[in-house]
Image 1 (cartoon, rainbow over the protein chains, first blue to last red):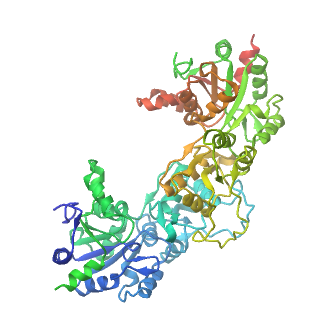
Image 2: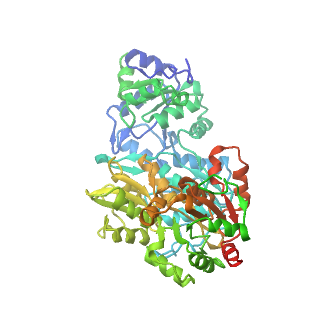
Image 3: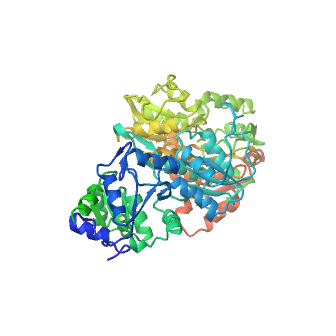
Length: 311
Length: 311
């Protein structure tokens, strides 16, 4: 068995007693949220029950999301609202929370961060005690990139999903990054997100690509598939990769994250990626594609309940 | 001699009689503008005289700029204002003009274009008779990407430099590009531009990178180093690559453009690239770097006047 005690990237459909055996063999379960636990404002059918049963059997359950739009407390409310009765703020690791933790604990930032991001990013930075450059309320629509004020104390630029992203923010970030000692972080690499009605919305990765091109630099990415979010959880809860299961819906993000961290991986088909895509990666000759292949595949995490209730 | 009758990518400093001989051997001279003809609102010293002397000796002179911020007429005024007495609108090929020409003459667009760009882009599209999606004046600051109106007649997205770039424009463009038959064009690939005071501003290439990431598509780039701008001039003025000289200040844009089109190339040191960078490319073992090496190098295009007046 490879992949941290997984199924060797076998892309194996699993349910019933075999799935129960797999779950019994692990201590900790990490779930992605969007497309796994919920889709928009609706819980995936059976998800609250699955989480409850895992906890009942003594598993520790964590939520690892690249979605940086909400602060942790807000996520805890959403879990509660959607019928998850036993998820607390401390179990939730968003890319916004982990970015703030990185700046505080790893980079030990002294100075300010210039943040491109929405409420989730700004709130987590403040909660972590990281000094954030305030929006300049003196800037009107005619403020120009030629004479906009720059804060001399900025030592890091952080890019996340931001529906108020604009040229001025991009230009300012670009100026800060001219100083090679200014850190360049991105919450997550997600290129886009599906919206209802077939629409899509650009993701943090899209905004980061603009700044990487304009600054001729590469961002340090905090979110999946980078290892940092696992290290962040592990440092607080003493996780062992060989004892942990990663469950996600995106092969290039969640499953690769699991592979990068040495975790056994489970693809669930309630989100973005399909069984056909997983099979294509499995059949591919390219060695770098192997890390996109999940060890196991379930239809939905409702299969977990079924497996655990079967006893 | 390679490179369309050039100096074989020799990176050779040239002036005086040798430069006169080179100029005499060509019929047409193509100049980049920013960093070659002018810097900001100041002509490069001696540039108006150089252009005048070239024309006096029967050369045809064209201006090929990736800068898409102004319509052609506006450029003609700038030439006149900076002391160039004999440059007309028809000699100026900007990436905005060429993008409009591409949509009209090559793509033969039937339908509308959704344009991200400033006045130069919008005006050139209108002048070419290309139908542009109007800015929706009904959109307030609270219009959301979930319900913003999309125009069903859009058949192309064009991205250029746009100081009013924002998340909503990016999200809309992303939605249009979900239709694989919708064309995706970029005026130019320039990642950033220098501003006075050591500042930089993100270029079209930066905005294009955001949309390429969000849409999982690659843009067709009209500006240098792509061949299209040369083809655009050639189709109107019957240019012969072997008889043409390309003069520019950016190795990765102007000099590569010359190499891609089979032109003899001259680097001038009044702009972005340096002699050291040219030499580094020349000394590099990587074959793909060879196209960044100019055939010749001059200090400034004032050297042209000196060479031509020497007689």
